[in-house]
Length: 234
Ligand SMILES: Nc1ncnc2c1ncn2[C@@H]1O[C@H](COP(=O)(O)OP(=O)(O)OP(=O)(O)O)[C@@H](O)[C@H]1O
Ligand SMILES: [Mg+2]
Figure 1 (tube, rainbow, N blue to C red):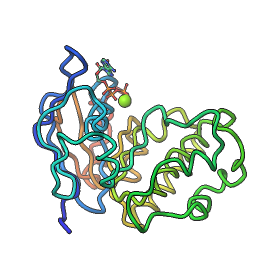
Figure 2: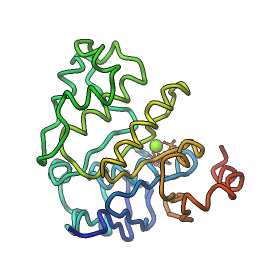
Figure 3: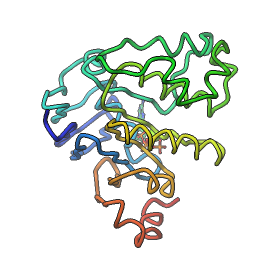
Figure 4: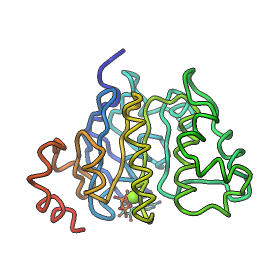
């Protein structure tokens, strides 16, 4: 198995006439947890959507486990083994927790059983028969993560998993993310919360206006914290 799980070169993306990504270069090694930091509108979500093939137009190179996926349709990309947790969480309001969990198809052997997902997120066990629309923001986020763990995808793309959540829920999600990393998942995570990012990640990319402008090892970030926070304007 190649050591590099995701390798992106000169990725460009457009929404209609708007050119949003201007040559993104990044790579994620197997088992690594890497964040994409950046201000609002920097292109973080667009980068994840471009990897999943859900932007209207993209170019460049995206290699997943050595396979070029820049021209692949999005259902094929998911099937290859990339799990995506979008910014809006994508929970079906009228389906209950169980139905939402069972929705994404299993793409590889070795994914978690429903029981394992419920052990990881005990709140979901209590809400198993509740419709998506009745869940709190935290429960929706747990469901959005739990849902992709069933599929067996080894690479997880998480878009702002802590956005809008209370500190105690952020702590809970952080604990789960650390356990997923320890279990061998490879994770590329968009985050605005630099403090939270520094508690889970190995490495960080900083995005600005559709490009990566800086790479930081997490170990180096602590001495540099105020500068990074300033860079993000948050
Ligand atoms: N569907 C769309 N159609 C047109 N422009 C879009 C669309 N989605 C995003 N954009 C634009 O693309 C740019 C990058 O947006 P993106 O959502 O990738 O930013 P982001 O870094 O995720 O920001 P945030 O932190 O606010 O989530 C922004 O200027 C945004 O207005
Ligand atoms: Mg975003």
